[in-house]
Length: 232
Image: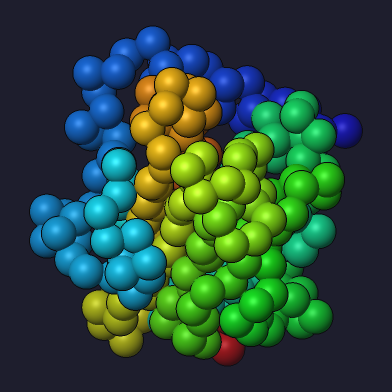
């Protein structure tokens, strides 16, 4: 019961954060590079070439006091029906995502291949995995012109939506890892697409959810290291 109320409290704070983000667009310049340095914002990441000229993007980052090998297992198991997204679970489930964030490494979800998919919602197609390099990078990529997409959208060439979601790990020190995440979006600039996929709606929501996700991965990876050290 305590965990349920904790999830509700966190979800309520997440809803408030989303509401504030939607109502205060002038803070966008801070949200789109939360945690990231100017160099990281400008850095070319794997998968950027899939959308060379995005309509908009954001780059977020966080430093995790753990070796890459302690961070990757939490990252590779993300997804609905997998390890969850370590974000505002209660808030996600209000719209039927059926997310269950785990606090454990799940061995059956420790492998991703190109062509696999990471679902956001049980009733929608998953985000296809375009690039995966174990211990280093995951790139999710969807294009309505070439296949199913995890968000509503047209499938005609003149009514398209394309996005990438990148997770990149960089070793800073032996026990310090940088996790960089980037989202890029392109679409036919008709009014409907601007409303559905443009930065005014998607960016405030997704940056709030992703900030919580990065903090969730950090918390779990660092807790795992502490547990290991305490048992030595």
